Length: 309
Length: 184
Image (cartoon, rainbow over all chains, first blue to last red; front, side, top):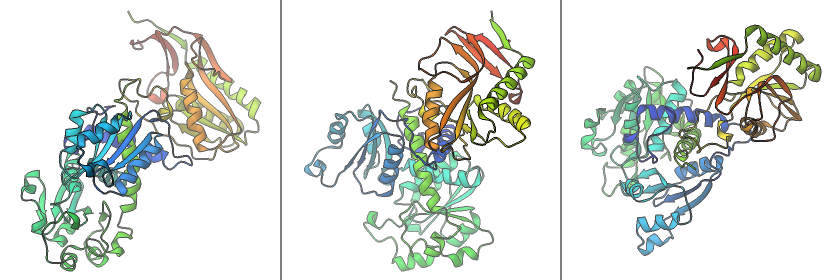
């Protein structure tokens, strides 16, 4: 397989395992490129990309922007704060106005699940979902699984635990899809109030006990407690969450085998992850960040090829 | 009916490779500041052979890297599917070095143009030369010519030159075939 089937990347659910492998192979090449003295290639020099962020983001937007610039694309950034969105402009109007400036690709983050799907139906440009509400975050899942593939050479047969706020996480859902498509076993773990009721239907193991989960897994992907998405209290206090679900070095050292720790960032240090773990040799968090640029370059490159001259 | 013609057979290939190596030595001896860069995917087999023969003759190590041009090509998005990238491995500095770019066939010159773009991301060489096994005459789109040529051939656009190596599990040799047809 040399090409992606769709001209958009809206979610992992729509990708086949062969397409994910193609993205990984392409990311391998870009990882080599971004470690050269000159980290730029001219592949997308005639492509203009709009990063349209209706929700706050630092690392995803930076990572996309860096990927786009390293592919030599022209980049425009839009964020809803201080824009006409505040004056009542619709999503479609906003994006059509941006497209009228001859934009070829749109990278969009939006608080509403399905917003990029809506957009993809109504505009000609390629759409990349950079996170839609609590639904999907495909490039994060691709970089997470790519980081496992980079470290272990395969994802097949690996036991991966996703620990934390599963209910409010778009990373969890996309990760579950990606890991299962590549043949990994998945367990989710967190307080019962932060586990969606349907989660078992996705074919994952469920645990409420973090020690049991860590003993089972090869890799633990620890998620941030998304306080900004929680309208009501899901657990009594951060201190209590940290006590029952926080991961520290003492806990890791007491396990029967070493495990790898991942985190999509930003970390609430001392809540879901202690600094002695986040900065230890168990952690591949910074590799995830580096891999994020390579994976996003791969996605942009493969989707841009759908833009035939 | 398949139309296929052998241009270079195995014994002739050995002679041609030996000549190319001696031409390189004539211009680059003592070979202290010269490095080889084989172009992916098919120039690397030729580059491997050249390196082996040069090391046999000179008795010293000759640095060899592999360069992939995929991300520097000008026909990206003019194809129905993107080209899959190959490995780039340049494990040395090319700053102020004499570079020998090596490819199996020189056709339009676009791959070599892309290779020069890819190469300068690793530094600024003092001199760049091009070595090819087959030079397809009258087919150039760009003003690029090789310094070292195994054999020049007249070809039509409807024909393709196929260079096969025993490293790929094939018989060593060069064939001329009509496009869309396989080696007999």
